[in-house]
Image 1 (tube, helix red, strand yellow):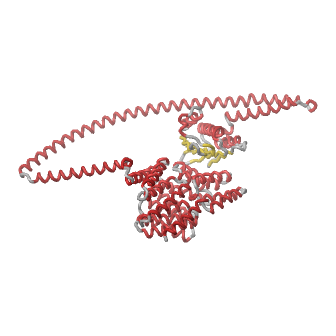
Image 2 (cartoon, helix red, strand yellow):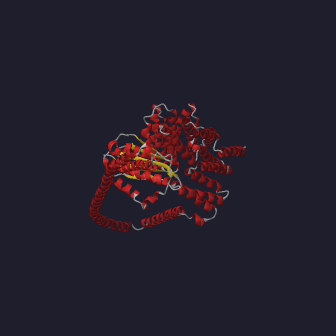
Image 3 (cartoon, one colour):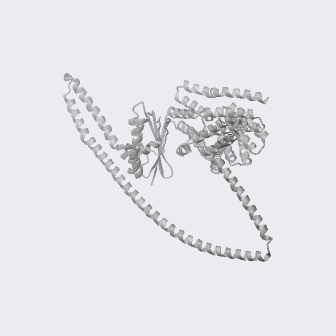
Length: 638
């Protein structure tokens, strides 16, 4: 009967996977058919709430679409950023995810609707748990829980209670975890928060399994699968199937376990999360091991390769252990002799040697006790003298070593101090040279800009005035009209060149307004849209910071226009802990960030030189064959 039920369930699962889910397909069709921007934005936000059932590419696509369609609407932009955190978490880029949280948390706080602010706060604990910082994660979840209770946000209260339970489960404290998960389940069931129930029941199933309560684990596992189907939560369904396979193995239902894990892997690959794909492939290799060792080797190798490619070190260790085990079961002992197995064998050898030495010592002691009491006394006196001599020698050697270590340490410290002073002097000289060089460049830009504005511009105006006086209705001349048109074009080109050399708005109104004017000038073409935002748009900085950051952004935007084939650029300025954060993001073609280390042109070296002057740092988040590049610049403020 169980086998028939499993076959029916698998058929239903395949139908679900073909179109992902009917509900998601319906939302996608509605998005395609809807033209009105505000209604389309609501549909996209609804679709993104099913992020646990979307593949990585699909998740990124709709985040970008919401940011584009939402325009200047802050809630749409923050929602897009929110789900980009989940994307970066999936592709193992926690630094980028944390950066988005830091930049948007302060923007979301003033909103009347606090759900986005609470969700960003919750994601901090979520990322800490995924990065194994469990105690910090518990503190973060509890802090967000208090805020959720203050703002009466039941949905986020359930998330935080489940988050605390998840963190305790990862710390191998299932009893404590169940306390928090029971609270989450009671609140979700009472308030009919059905979309949160599958994950809560799944965590409870894991807790009961850790406590060896198999019937309870199976009960909550079945509930998790049921509610996962009802709410279109493919990610939780895959997790539940993986746990279900373990329960089936405990009941010696190996074929059922294999079918459960195979379907879990099918869902994982559809969603595209390597962290869980490796786990399920490892479990699948274990299930195959006693039925088809060769198939188990292929599956474990696939798990290890994916873990290595995705830099999942913990998962790689588990996959390698499984690979060694299935190779041994297949009789391939040489292949199984990995570093891990060698380590285990070495530890076993050391253990055996220690046992043999302990046995020899006991036998010698027994023989010694059988000797004459006088001989024993003499031996003990000799031993005592030897110990005293050794202690004296050790004391002398110890004092000598301490003195020698102190002398060597002092010499090393003095040498390091001298090196540090030389490096500091060299760095100061280099910074002074760069400051002087860039100051000279900026002064020359100002001079040329002023000459063009005060010298050439009046001449062009005078020429146009004289030509206009020549022109009469009776003497209409195409050549004269063309000359006047060319003078107008030359005047506009000259004005734009003068502005690029040294925009007057930078000195009058500051960095944010100058960047906004640059965006307006470059956004005249329909091929490129540039947005500039700042949490303090009228903030002024030192001329050194304003000029250098303006030139850095100018260089980055020029590179985007020339190489990235982007249609959208976002420039964002935020302030936090006495530092200025600048982010330049585009949706164009990415590139290999390591190529910057061997760049031939002057653009990248000029950026680094200007960052040296303002003591700033830069981080480039990009990858070849992937759309989208994010550049983070951090500059300390006095």
